[in-house]
Length: 265
Image 1 (cartoon, rainbow, N blue to C red):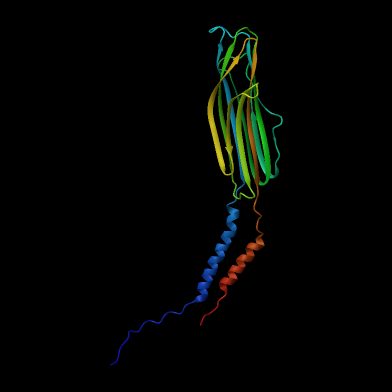
Image 2: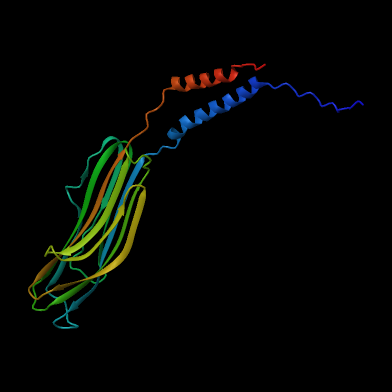
């Protein structure tokens, strides 16, 4: 008895050379993009800090004679940039500080106001910097009368700090601190403290309004200080560019490997 078996079509010959060429070509492209990725995704270290302070006189009260006048009371002062404010950049660093301040008009009246605005920004491509900017506010309260007074101030503030662009924590860093400190002439008594602190790859913001009351005794005086500080430091490290000859070498090497054909019998 004869058994008949269906004939199967003969398998087509494999072409390992083309397969290898495709695989090698794909690997070559992958290698190219892997090398190019760190350069295309790199950014500079960016630091930024801003502080805005607005002071207005909400009310003036005669404590000894309610409803009476405010003769003998004087309030003066304003904001200015401390002369020690400076930065020390080295390398490829671009910085932009800004400042504006003002003084109270005399004699003062309810509703009078004065403002301070300060800012700092830096772009660190390959270098480092340490920056310290101090905006000082000094206000004098003097009373030559036999009445005691109270002066109520509204202080509105806005503090913003950012530090971004750090990709390698071992060779790059960035930090920005913006703070506001309010105290009187005793030095140890602080009416108010606030700060916005941005560490590596972080940002912070703080806004609000605080009301302060300064009591001025008969024949007395007092002082009020408002210090706004922008403290920033950072280090940026640019990647070392790969020479064009290296790109061409690896491209040609991957192409040669792709076209090399080894037949398997």
